[in-house]
Image (cartoon, rainbow, N blue to C red; front, side, top):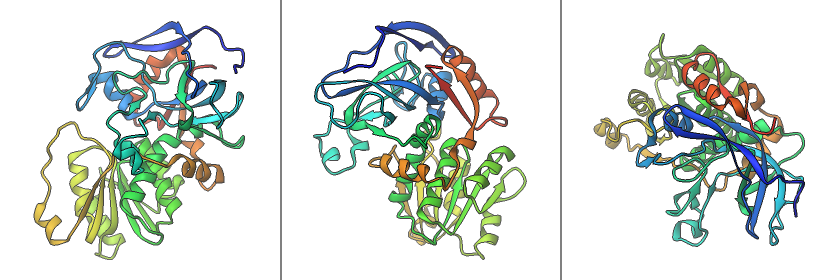
Length: 353
């Protein structure tokens, strides 16, 4: 079943580092269990910027032209013969990683660890800076009319925070420090608020991002250019330290600060990915204080929770969207995100505007 779908579409294709061109491509052909989504909003993520400037993240390397973008939402334009979860015309959020569903990780519910995942905009899989994408039906989720496409796209970075909260067993009434207020860090603040954290302490260099964190639910903000984060966290917690710390910046010094901010028996989540593979950490501190350390790789089973929370209106995620671009200006949007971090929070591209 279709809804007046064209045969060709526009796409923003990255041919090499900092070289994105608008091209005309065939609209994807869907299988019986797949959905064709007319993409209405795509957020620019830090990983998009890494591929755009470096051509790689860890062992994921861009080796041929690729379409970036994975934080997306849109309208169902066509459905396969066996699709029963959504209908043509439904507004949906898209979870960007399609897994096999049959491996041990998938069957245990930790499908983010599936070795055969196909994740949008992770080489060699193309992403969402296009007018139409196809997706298996179990990775699209209906959203209410009260939720904008921009907010629905933000469910992807929000999911990282939800997953970090689950992995670190964050409980209502506990204290959490979140280091780094990029888009993932800001949505992590919303996740901590959703869980019911009593104190949410955040750090960053940029006043704009600290102000946004306060609006998302942070109870305390620390500008690390002006204050020592460990000293300030000690004051806020009466010398005790926080129950949980999440490092979301991917910065070695920030990770060390996150570890040092913990109380005895605290829990640390490594969310951000640093450029280097090995970072020195205070091993005696980890051992003496029985610190639990959790790696965070994407997320699993988070989208329904994310939709429910953002639909509740408890936080206004739309405030994070500071810049808006059409598909033709995708490269300009990437340059803006890269060079003006002190002026913008979340940049959204609208492929069908």
